[in-house]
Image (cartoon, rainbow over all chains, first blue to last red; front, side, top):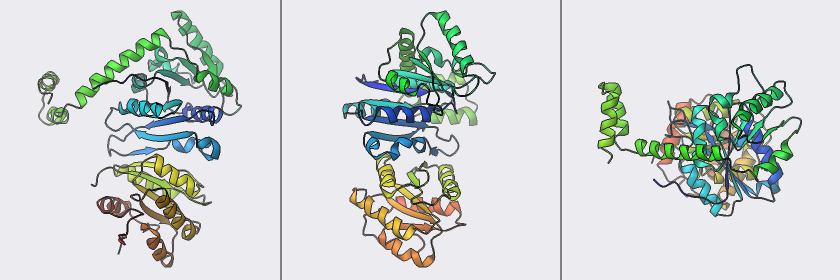
Length: 259
Length: 145
């Protein structure tokens, strides 16, 4: 499968669950529309048990109640479906089509599920990582490996204790690598940092390390798609659990029988 | 057709009770569908816009405050005017039996009162998805007849 090359901006907003991604997206939309036309692709997880999904990000976008602004906004809720809990690769095509049809910006709001968050780098060309105040268990984004992807880090809920600690910890650990993205504090309660965030989001510069991380994710995504679109994939999985087919044999079968 | 459907669950009007709508939304999710919940106090225009943008095949309207006789037909009309003739409309909440025939006449294909088992709603979704019963269709079929 081809990974299309796109012009224009596709920005992923990622970060752990509960950190305020939807509110951040809402605050950006309030400030950038109606002057700009913005599409939001809001990704939520498909239940592995039922195959269904509750797509609840749209409801958080209060900006849609503003008649003028909502004319400049398109929101589409997307379930992860079979893409192993992260962003379906079709999101990349959706974003290209939207940009080609005169949207200025596409914002991808991700699932917030941890390791699989890295995959957003395969579909976006700028990554904003949102963190929350310190909870005594370290920087969540760091654990998920997200910091190497970030073109901007937002420490949200700055009205709460622990936000400054996170900024300090981030500055220290990223400062060591010498390649630091900008870090800003925001609060959707006090309004701190929100104007600045909206301005920065359209002018993000690409960092060398984030570009490398994105290329890596693109390659991983293409290979994952090749595997999962193999028509024998599900059958091989069944045989592994029901007939005890071993992993080495399974992999060999999949690479020998790809059609 | 059958299979996984995209379904909008909407709360039109000023009614602030959404526990039932959320229960139905979860049941539809557990039944394998993708559900977009609109939140409370949505106007007909907002609901139709959501259905359009989300490419939903079904929209479920929940009303417990008595505004169904006015709002449900209004939403059906707006869907037709917007060219969304294939969208299948169903309703739920507190809707007296005597209020139902005009709603069916306006294009609502099913009305589920309190206590409806979620399996029944899932059966309706499956059956309706294989019929030509969109809000713009002449087919007079509705669930339970």
